[in-house]
Image 1: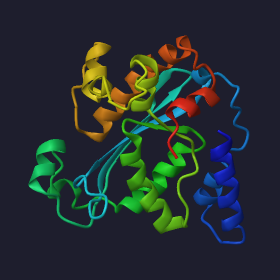
Image 2 (image 1 turned 120 degrees about the vertical axis):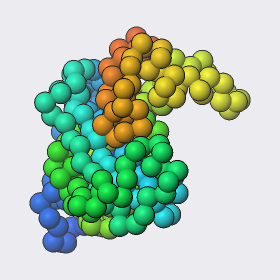
Image 3 (image 1 turned 180 degrees about the horizontal axis):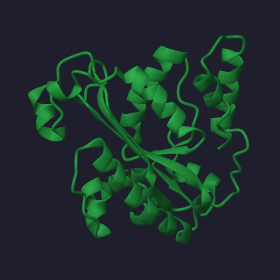
Image 4 (image 1 turned 90 degrees about the horizontal axis):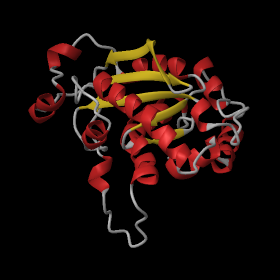
Length: 237
């Protein structure tokens, strides 16, 4: 966790003296007071999923954001974030077949940067969790850099990495044995979870939150008990 705090200190030094919106100034301070020795099970998480116009980081854009808050292992169903975003470009038919979001659905939606400003306020100081988090974080950080000149400062965890630490045998030769066991569908099947709205931002965020609930105790049993441990095995920069 010291690496995240070091990067945060560097960002704060670089942003010093700049006039930033309130939500950006608050985000600079999100790591203050975090204790790496605290129980991982006692943390506050925001589990997020994005749907996009495609998988190409260079040209595709966000069309939907869904998130649930998980506090001390419990999903707070009354604290949900869900909003469509206008990507400012067309949505390929191939993508519509996956998530079902059509141009008509997003015609009156706000642009992603406005949606994300609200999401940033919803997120607060909580730890971000996503499945294959680097994908979602690329899009979130692109908006952050464009609007505020910095990346998101919250800790970020990946449930795929949690799965590999808790459920997959060590792989010293990099053969990726058991990698398919960490897919969202495979984990949902392992835990007997139904995912009725698969490939929607809110449906996949709920599935990931339910999986997080189950992975955290398994990580604790495997010896990864503290927040610092969780950052070590599942943290994403």
